[in-house]
Length: 433
Image (cartoon, rainbow, N blue to C red):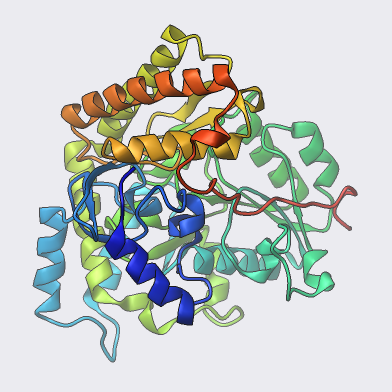
């Protein structure tokens, strides 16, 4: 068992004054086995990260998505440093706002008009608001995760503090369930916001059918491309699938870790932001993030980064499943998803999935792999990283097999099981007209 004294000391200080201790839920101690994993990091470079106790890991979290090229990526950091010499935030608009908007207009199919902001939740909420204004309707259908704002988080179990009247305006639907979607798509629906994919691929032309039905219904279609944008293709899922949504939102990958977000869409809809719909923020024109975005996108285009993410991610996806098959564990665990971002899952027959995940996680940390069930790929993941990771998986899956056969996974945990973030709740009845 590895000890993490510096992490534990920081955590003991944090719990006295921070509630909760993390600013990003997916980075918090509940997503890593308490007692069997570090809690705080010190630095990172490329695809590797070091905790505050000096331990080095190959990272498959990638900042929970924003790190697409690699930590401390020279071309991006040079652009940030160059802009830093000229300033960060100013009293008037900055020229980078125009330059970035022109670049986005060039590469994203639906980007007739562009708004720049700071976080994914911001632009999701702005897209919903302008869709309501444009259509004159109130109801929203959603599928995926869309941030912490009232209109969305009311569909989950962590909805305290949100009036019921707000909760009633949004209904979640099931991905790849066209029957469910048809039932919910009533005349009162202003917009449909969905992640084009999370891990499952669309079946039976699902995305194209959703787009067609939205158009017939006078409902705006919003693609939430926080995860898909600039990863599956530089132009996002809309370019990959050949679907042009009315609006689309982006964050995470396109500035390699700097805080920035985009809302793109039809000009006739977006023009409502001129007077009718208010969406402004002090830091929307912050220049370091825009400089990082320009450099990141340039590198993505020149190096064909999405192809590299797919290539390296496919090796992990196939390699994991082959190891599971070789050990006779295919009925208990699998890796699936798109190669740029895949997930490892565990069947309840193997034991409590959260306990099994915690066991695998603790053993991977011992072997220098920072893991929380995902392969969030970056351009810096090397062939050696993949080889080392698959070797670690081979050792850990062999241990898991022994634990499953002995039916004592929980007894082998050196820390606490990982926690579920929240569960989705939804109305059984169709959205109101």
